Length: 319
Image (cartoon, rainbow, N blue to C red; front, side, top):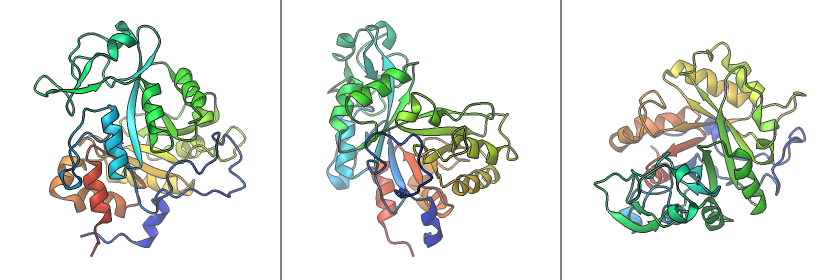
């Protein structure tokens, strides 16, 4: 079993609230609205859809209001969810461009009205024709945010060109300090966290080793650039980098560069392609070799399809 050293706490989700340099782009409501925990932050991918029998919690459809309620019940820190726009301009929760996998409907989200979408019933778990239909229906973004307000941080994965509308809705609901948006970045991209509309809320750059323009040599400058505004001041609304990597050497450079900027490293364990083969299915057999390795090596945020299991693992005494 891994024993997590005290030095690793540099990577956990602890917000510095009094740094005078953090004077740019503070989200409305202050920096204290997101969770402050002395352990790695646990993000539930598309909500808490996996059953948690020990907690008496059954499964739920991905991206459903029930999946959100399950996250609150198990104590997850954040729920990731996916945003698209209906035919009549309403922001709705749906991962795929079409509704076929996850509902009893058919067609593209963009070709269906909000009324049509919100009457579709969601299939259990990740969906597919073998999964049963549930009483849960497709939620609007507004409904999901209202359900989360004051209870759970939300990572908004925006699947359509609706960044401005999404952030405007969060502002309307006074939730700019409770949501996080993100975008993939490369060496030629601006520091989006300092630009509108991303500067209004929490922003997270995504760095992917599969982008051939990003090398271990250019990585520290890229991370530094994404953490600062055009005047070289630290962006207060950028607290993490999301890293997709295939080699541990790339990970080491990224982690060191991120920590030099006071940033946490966010890792996804959703599939083998995200973290050099360390993923949830492997963690089911060898949690020390997956989650333990990541935490031991300074990862501060883990997005997973098994949030209850990860929380249990973190809570277990380490020898």
